[in-house]
Length: 450
Image: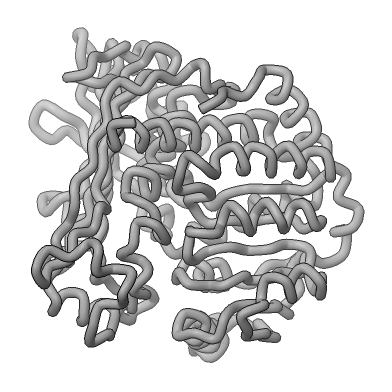
């Protein structure tokens, strides 16, 4: 795969950081394209001051779009703080061509089947639409060059192409990042090794889960790696993003700063009953039969990438189980190893399956040193504290900071709206998005033995 050049990065940064979006000075008008993933609806779980309440939906006539519309109706009719979205829906096999010709809005929101997502992004940008896309923007190496061209075209046309990185708004991650930037206590980030990385991020997800209080129904294509993408290029997008965002805040990361050391993939095996329960389907569609061993479905939803970024060893991994234990949900583990302290997020049974940040002091650090650090931290995050727990300290986070994964979609959307209206997207965002997908694509290639 060809690496993009420094000159291109500079052009992208300059064009995307100084955009004059005068055409969006009044209202942003959303277009939802083929909403096959519940993330599309979560963007509309809240209302936004600068966004029109009229949303145009373009999709094939399928259960996916009906499920999406039902969620929007649920948000509009809820008792507490209901939304007021008005939806105009076009259903037909020519939905994408119809969207391009109608030009009914100025922001295309994408969250669904990933097989043609990069193509949709590219064509939407080429036709003058801004794009707000759920991860991943690309699921195979063949389309990576197309994505890079889409970013370049967006820069040329003063358009904003951006992906939905919700995990930056999880409070334990925010505080982990903040503490890692306090050298008086954390020291410097270790270099790490392949066997003992300086940064590790692990994410465990579940096929059967609840969203907005109801069990989610997965479309059958979600289990096809040619349509959803492998786990190593899907959820790991968030993890690679967090490594860049936490370890090198405000810095441009180039593909030349990345070296893939090792990568692997493995399947989650589902029974026919498991598949039926989560899809509400009584039989496997033809396109899934190639993944069957007898009557059990092998889904390559698990993956791990070991790599260096600016010489720092990092490991990201994702695991998909069928269903979480009682009282649990998706979980996250993260460690940043410093020369003076380690910062660890755990989310297991001992933490009540809630993300909890721990501090392991090293090199003679003590509670008094930590108190000085927290005096500075509470200026930005009032109420945050810590208490000793064995050889570690647990960070005490007031409940009002814990707004949850679903609420984070509104936070990302608010950022996107600000960038779109004011043209103030940080200069590192676009090149770092490109490098993020370079990392996942090269990881996939290595895992596949290419």
